[in-house]
Image (cartoon, rainbow, N blue to C red; front, side):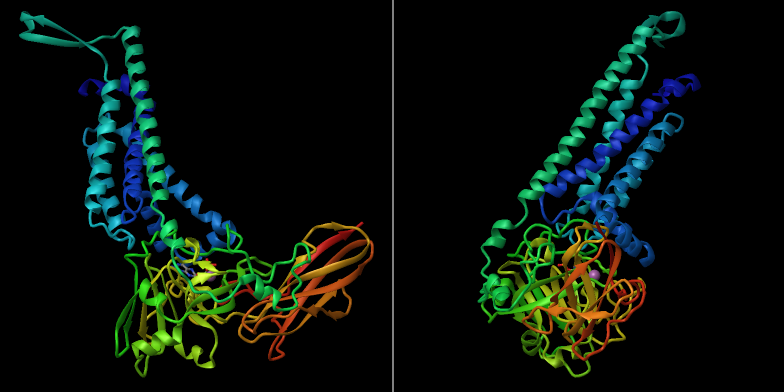
Length: 535
Ligand SMILES: Nc1nc2c(c(=O)[nH]1)N[C@H]1C(S)=C(S)[C@@H](COP(=O)(O)O)O[C@H]1N2
Ligand SMILES: [Mo]
């Protein structure tokens, strides 16, 4: 391709070379997606790259991504990773005409970095990371070769004894240039379509690989009918717009927070939970082992420390599983173990003092949620649920190990990222109805919401309209102090704009902190308020 080295040609061909570079980069990524589809033990290259970004992102950045984008941070990161790769490919294409070594170097580096991304991904367990990276890089490079060859000018050969043999000269005619472009776009279109097809196929295969059937086959021995839990108490579920006492976990109603870019897909047949560290009897449980043990149902409200005042990162479910204390008994925890660390299949960790369990609170290795096997997004096949602690210190999803250690010896995932090492859930209340900025007719309006302070329980919720007196709201029943409580108050709403505020008191009579305080380092504080217009 030395004939493309002339400056004039580089000028006109540069955009096409850039396009060739971007398409070859896309092909390399697409091959990664295809491999991802073949086996649950091979994660996607793109996702592994994104995982690395999440891991090295300073806590501040990751935190504000969760704050500002909510769970949309994940697609944004994946799209960003893809765009960046395509840009690098385009630059490579542009500069490769001047320096022959550019393209091979870039694809070699791509392969090495891709390999490293896979190697550091705990979900990459197939042992063929090198092959994935090699094939992806080689496929990208081959695509680039084909595309740039199509861009090379057509040449005419003739025999000229005076010049000493066969002479090749570029055909400078517009027709030849046109033919060359046409063939380039043909190849480029084919390569682009191929990349899309690989990606699509990889995705399709990946979805086939999820363990829905295996999940459905799991017996969770829940003795509790979820509907009966709500029915057993006087609840306010009939108030429109108010959070139901038990949060529905079909679909995405129950909040999901985790650092995983794609939900880890765990084959329940290969899965096990180890209890390690400061125990006299290190032990490993398969799912079958756990299923043969006695399971209990516990209704527990869990919440994320990143939940802002008035936020939705909280939910209440009936969890089914094996009491954590039972498992620790079997493992025979040693004297002096002051931290219980949960470790997940995707390398996430969370730690809390096991002494919190001494008060007898609900604490489960949960394999069921609201009467069904744990959904994949909530940690299938097993997770921890500890009443009264924020998820980031306790609720390890996709758990594979419980490690008993000391408080000083280990910091969970979020601790070096700027969050408090201890994470008890703060007393919190939220107004669900009326919703903020709504317009309502004059007359009696129901103000209602939820409040929670696990494991202390709730003693009182108060509502204040504008600068009026704090009025005591009516509380629904709750099955225990470990769940949220619905509350309501009838309000005779006069015409005008009004501010409605709420605050709660926990079971000890302590008032919810007024704040305002941001979510980091240990949870938001503040009395939730909504503004409504009465017409
Ligand atoms: N493996 C893993 N488990 C995890 C997390 C995570 O990032 N990875 N996030 C935790 C956090 S911060 C919270 S609030 C809860 C949320 O649980 P949910 O998604 O089932 O609602 O899961 C916890 N368990
Ligand atoms: Mo969280």
